[in-house]
Image (cartoon, rainbow, N blue to C red; front, side, top):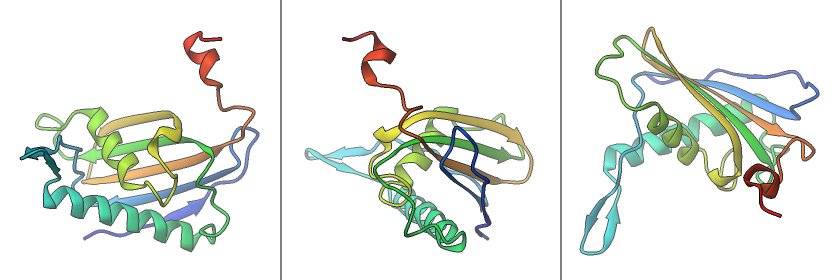
Length: 151
């Protein structure tokens, strides 16, 4: 069973808006798409999971009454906590983050390239995923040149 719980996080000096939500059930990692005659084919199970995560994210925004004021054109921080009963047969941590960031495109951000900071933690516990997305003020979003040493 999958459900969403959300809470609007109080504003602080380094975040303008933030949303938390939980997805109960086993987390799915992003997987490379299959190629067939020059076309990229995304597995059906992966598309279904992405659609479900996007729906849960939108429901969290609606419950927090942020759906209309949440900006899609800002810079973001993304935190993902993946809880699994057994970490031995687990997916790569970066693929969990990629799945969540891709799934929330068009709901929490216009494009996942707008995420400037992110973390993925894997912990032991009942299966589920906790997601926190935060909008960074423009003053804290690093300019590209400063990060990579370009003029």
